[in-house]
Length: 132
Image 1 (cartoon, helix red, strand yellow):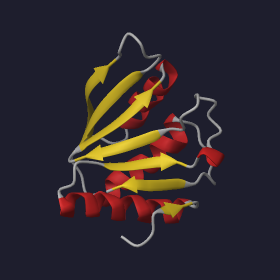
Image 2: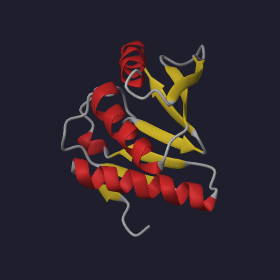
Image 3: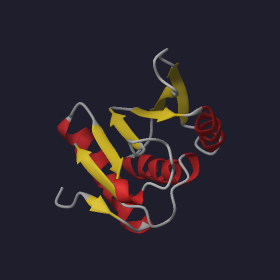
Image 4: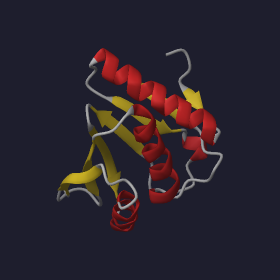
């Protein structure tokens, strides 16, 4: 990969798909997508939203409201499903593990929509692929 950030929907989709393809080709542990802190309009705390791809699993932290929106989004991705929900006592949210048995482009589309629809980011948010 030669680029690691993007700020438009088409650029982000290409970035996420390239990152997912590189992650799978390299058999790396994870691919991490972080939102640029300057783009974070979620008021979700000190850490902006992030999503990790680990093989065929997408991992993301959600508040109760975000988890409800995630469930709604998954209804449009029948090949994706929640496999595990973990709510540590010391945390205010839930860690969701979503199995994503699909190609890199479909994974990219899900990641984009999750940032926009689950986390409520606006259309000009900037994302970084920080690990592949």
